Length: 165
Image 1 (spheres, one colour):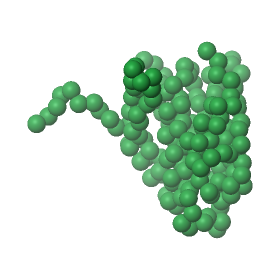
Image 2 (cartoon, helix red, strand yellow):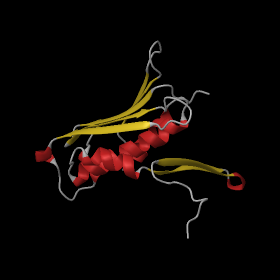
Image 3 (tube, helix red, strand yellow):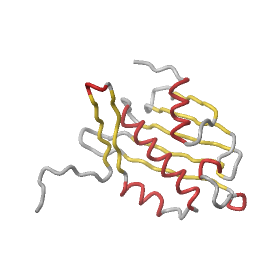
Image 4 (cartoon, helix red, strand yellow):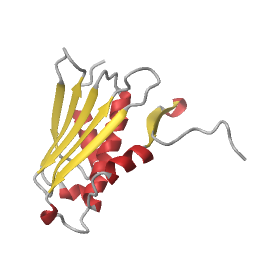
């Protein structure tokens, strides 16, 4: 049996809100996009996990703001994972898909097998960059690496940054 009302989930971000519980959020699934990104590079599992988490965060954040061109996340550390960089490009027109890319720089000789992926970053910073395109001054915000995941770093960033209407 085919459900013609089924939601197409692949490469989708769906916002939700529970009115009576004052809860809102987003559910995301980036199978095809993330699969293509990761297949291009052949990262070791520890780095692949970081790239996947950063790409997902970038898509979730990018989808929530009124973006004319590009949102980037950069995670720089002094550990084996030196740089995780992601870009979310806003849809070019109504109904067009957004695009995402991700990349990592790491020192394979310093990777710690069996360690949590986040531990591979070490000390460093979490940067959010918003570029609205030609003629606009890019915005950038930095916070120190904090918590136990990139999601924790994003939460720390938003807790410390000024949210403008």
